[in-house]
Length: 205
Image (cartoon, rainbow, N blue to C red; front, side):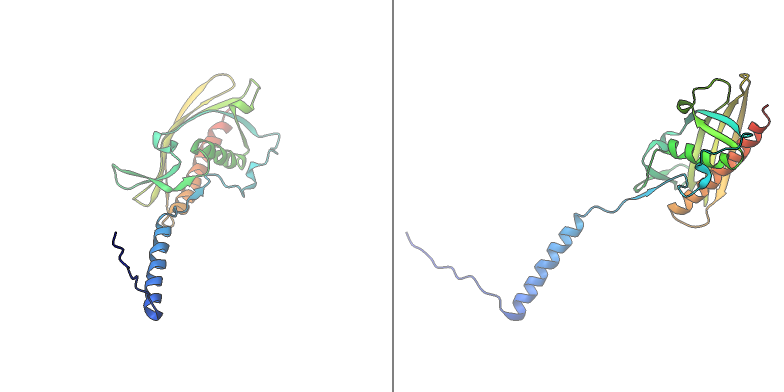
């Protein structure tokens, strides 16, 4: 057997530093490419609002919300943006911190509380005589036209089982770009809906 001696070249001085720096840079880039991008979570209701207090005046109207029906695209965790008349973009980095149905209920409760209406979920109420409401949302989305569209209908049932049907088509302008501005506009749209609901509820004896 014939053995051969192999000589490995050694890097010295600046040449070694150059190659060492190159290796460090390559490994750093590989590490960065494997790091997942950060996620941002949003709440539809305002946690800082004092309207979630359970203290209501004796004159407050009690309303039980039986059901909220949402379009399929609002059942995703990602926030939605309408990019054209026919297309929607569902974000993978900007997410709801809770289901939209829950956030909408909380936000509507806050807005109604300021109008002397106490909103409760059906599973939180065991009484009989009360006003009931069912809400169907057709669209609730920030659009490429610089506004939030909030459309749908709701049914109010009085304690005497009298049903009244209403439709709504609300538009609120976006003051800035980005999802944070969209959330602000969505809250404003919910406040508008609460105003109309409170007016109709106030007509019921």
